[in-house]
Image (cartoon, rainbow, N blue to C red; front, side):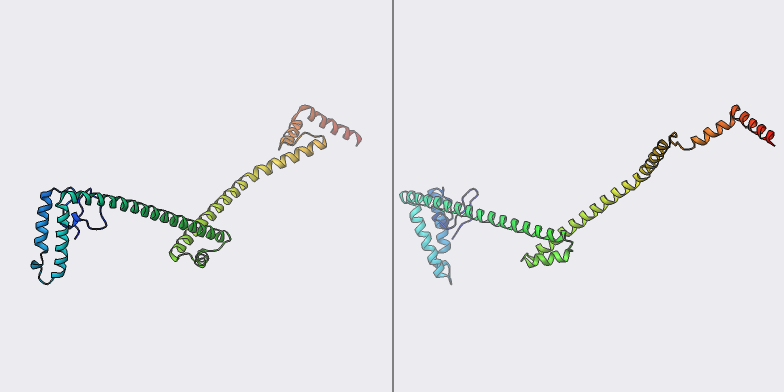
Length: 239
């Protein structure tokens, strides 16, 4: 017979004499006496027709608990023994909890390592150009759980596709930049070649239509016009 836990009290793994009577460990003598009378009336064999054996055993436990707790000397000894047992139980529970925490931490570390290994494997196959279904099959072949294998295959495939798109965009941007720079480079190269040729011939560098402009200017000069008339006069004398 275990009573409900009192707030702030350590939860126990086995019934104590106080639990048998339904009182807390700091109950007064009067509280113990009232609890005993109530429990005795409830579990008296004469009041439990059809369940006499259970009632008789419980009634005996109640009597034994009251016999000890109603005696100040016996209660003091019982409290001391009980406190020692509780300290041992608490120490044992602490060790068990620590061992459980260590096992759980080791299990998490092993699981994380296995997950990282599966992701690395999937990445290697994805880098070789294999699709999502191949990645999924490879992971299953390595005894990876199906749900986890599907998750890894989906994630790695999506990542690989994103990387390919980024590489394509970068390559397209570089090609566009090179194409935009080609006309200027070609024009500069042609101008340099023309100037080099002019230097080799001993003539001024070519600057577009400047030669034609100079020729027209000479024709329009008065000295040039007189020279032409003089040439025609000499030809007339010959004939």
